[in-house]
Length: 276
Image (cartoon, rainbow, N blue to C red; front, side, top):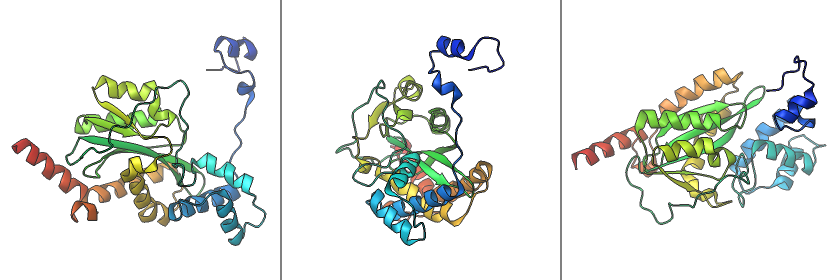
């Protein structure tokens, strides 16, 4: 948007675009190698002990050799990652004050068929050098991952892309559930849901259990795939995660699905509905 080579002064350009003048001079500071190492450890610790706050994680990191790390620095890294202790849901964005927040529609609802409820969330993924963010759309009843996307930023576009792919491949659900993150409350995202006549449900603030099946998916993805590898790039991460989600849908058996795979349950239940 800002053209530094244009003859129009930067201050005038920022005024026309209604942007802060200070923001146009901002240069992003790269994350240091030491911080990336700590962020990976913090992510692993949070998956194991989601109730740990910044104090306990600081103490744990000091025990692992990061002797000079302070609680304030740990808090900063946790905010960058979108991680908080369990008493507040791990989330990668805060609600936008001007975005509409929808009520939670799943309380007491029996969800037993495909395409009744879909759910989504975003998680932080460490790589060998750097990190990225993963969003996935899941069918609630069958645990099937319908679509997913990676991004190195937290804008809404990669979430919209995942949603549109899921709709193109599998039709539309009755209800779509998410947290109150700004990506999911944005008009760009909710507009797609409204356009397709999908009821919008959003978790209560801080209630991680409202989207528990996606939270369990993140644990599986990280322990069975991400932590076992050190992706060298987003391209490699996309390739390897593609293989993992194929395995997850087609070969990984779930105790909650009577030891069947998500694909088996999704297809079988749809056939039963069609026959009925």
